Image (cartoon, rainbow, N blue to C red):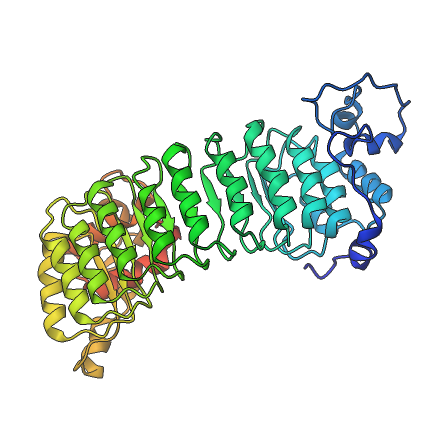
Amino acid sequence: MDDDEEPLESNSKDEDDTELTPKGSDDALYCEAEAIGTVEKEKPPKEDSETDLEIEDTEKFFTIGPKELYLEACKLVGVVPVSYFIRNMEEPHMNLNYHGLGPRGTKAIAIAMVSNTTITKLELEDNCIMDTGVICLVQMLQENYYLQELNVSKNDIGLEGARVISEFLQRNTSSLWNLGLSGNNFNEEAIDLFCQALSINYLIRNLDLSHNQISDTGGEQLGQMLNFNVGIQVLNLSWNHFHTQGAVALCNGLRNVTLMKLDVSMNGFGNEGALALGEVLRLNNHLTHLDVSGNDIGNEGVSRLSRGLESNEGLQVLKLFLNPMNMEGAVLLVQAIKRNPKSKMEELDISNVLVTEQFVRMLDGVCAVHPQLDVIHKSVQGFSAKKSTFLMANPMKLIQSYADQNKIPVVDFFQRLNPAGTVKMPVGEFRKVMVQQNKVPLNRYQVRELIRRLEEEAGMVNF
């Protein structure tokens, strides 16, 4: 919270005493702002398809200032205004995480957002919104076609909130494509509701359901949904309760042609789940990022995953951190990539596996064939401190020294290596050109450090 933020205690006080407008009521949330000062008109009977936010006269919401509208809404619902919201109403990204809004504070935000055409991303994580606050947000979304990203994670939404959101998603009436629902105590019944909605809603491209209570039944439901959905590109299911049965059922839906990034870390796939994932990798060339860290996958499961990697032509990132595998499994993975001339693997994370110098020499040979590849492993057995220091010599200092000697800006050095000549470049392509260039010879570890410093967003470096 900002230092000049006004106290918000009144937002959370007596929340249960405030009754929000139920769906279908004539007392619309949007209409509450009639108190702004216009003459109230008698409203005609509503059709069932109309929302609680619709009123006959909406012109004033576009003539009154957004700040004044929000302040009036705060008076109407009885909460202290959030100064950060007022100061940033003209910015596209509104971050109200951890502001203690409660349902009534959320209601005031929703009223102000109905006519807002600037904010495209709204973050409301950990605000104790609950299902009553969700009703207000959904009513707002039925009027606001500018908001594209919404994060309501950690808000104790529960089953009733899930029902409200799923009914809204089935109507396909907004511009929303990114939805964060992490940590809301969703169980199988809630997941069933979402899956019903997402079997017909193809607008949601990025969905976060991590840190919920989804077990094997939910895995089956999600697998069936993915068989129908042709919209989801990024799905986060980490920190749930999948085990072998749910993992296998989920994998049955992973022949999905639109899903590109899947995070199922910190579940319980085990070796049988890894077998199902290996089959997915054999058949699915659309998936580019897969995170199965912390899934109780040993060398047996890694062996089965490796079989999929031998023929996969799409996967770029595979994370297997915190699985009970050892160097034997690491060798299987690297050799599978070596045997696949069409592999696009850029990052293999096995950072809990201690390797030997012999493994590093083998990896050097594989990276000569696949220069875009980086294998993140634990420190190497037998490496002296002096040798480790040499391998990790500061790459930026080396490049700066080269640039100074040739009297060019550092950014020019990078741009000349980029075929497009721009200041941005995909990580895999950047790693490949940096390993292959000979102006400033760098090893894999130095290139990794360089990427860490230059990576602006996932998958892209910015010079």
